[in-house]
Length: 454
Image 1 (cartoon, rainbow, N blue to C red):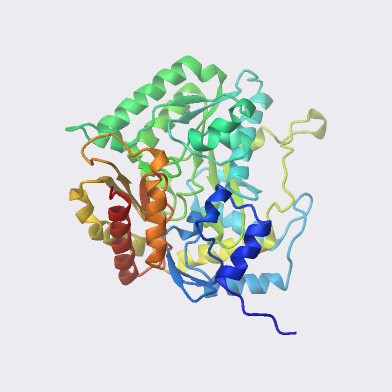
Image 2 (cartoon, one colour):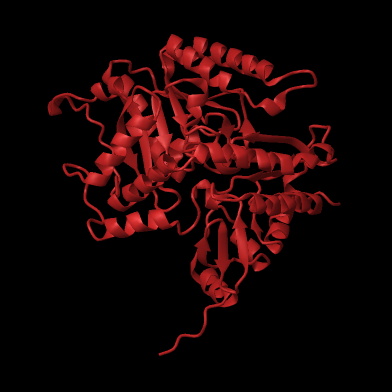
């Protein structure tokens, strides 16, 4: 029996009859089309009507080396013929062992143990529970709180939401959440005329110092997104803040959790953002780009000191009893190994520095745009804020949905942008070339013009 040809319209109708999409007010789709994707190749996504879209956001920041990457595909096919999954409690397999060895070798020194979960939010839950449980096992039962930064985002499970500070995600569920202590962000965009990022860094570190002096006896850990607070508006800070924060955490006896779920694996210009400050966190959370955008997997790395606090006789009940059904899935580990092999074989970071500079140069005209504020870049992450007046701090009302205007225009021009409120950003796959960057930057400028037009 011949099936009718698949079309965007037909698939959209089927989609809207059964699906509930993430981070979406579904009523919007009465006017806003859902775009079914038939295939991907490199930085491009192709729909069922033959249109293509440049994936400027790496499909929610996960894709590093392009869609349908031949090397990752081959590694997955080979693994598929060997082992698709096995329980990781009491059993093991070669891909998870090899991946763990590589992660320990690549991450900042001192991180020697790897615990796996299924996604970024789950990885954050692991780090929060492990930090609390460490202090419990060492007899410090008062340590139950966490310190987070203003504008931070760490995921949408309840623990991760608790240590975030983006009200759009958090406010509805506030009654269900544990209380966190929120401290000023080192966001460099806060600087006033004549100030530099160093002044913001010192001011933010002083706020953290005061908070730790008051609360350290009750605090398990400080959690931070190193260098870029992504979902909070692509807010960027100086590496010196991380170095100062590490010193403060050591001085006051609290853990440091580095959430590199979005910023790890080359996004900030180094393999891991913490490298730029020369620090080792007590917990390093990784996901998203870990598998090159292929399969869900997260890893939480920690130190031997923390591992040892859980290593005891069974009767002591000190073990870390946390699990996911697909923990350390062999297919996901194979994709992660293939991703790391590309970093080993190719000059990825060097190329990224050149590509990032190209993006910034192509968008330099926005520095004089009347509605473009705080053009900024860290590695392969670039962002700019839409404002009624670029010289003033007042923002467009969220009810105007300027970001949606930019999104729709970009789609009409063959690019996938997904603004964060009034912030437009680029975080493309690393296989983008200079011509594609030029196309993308042109579309972003057009989209900003359209979105800020009254």
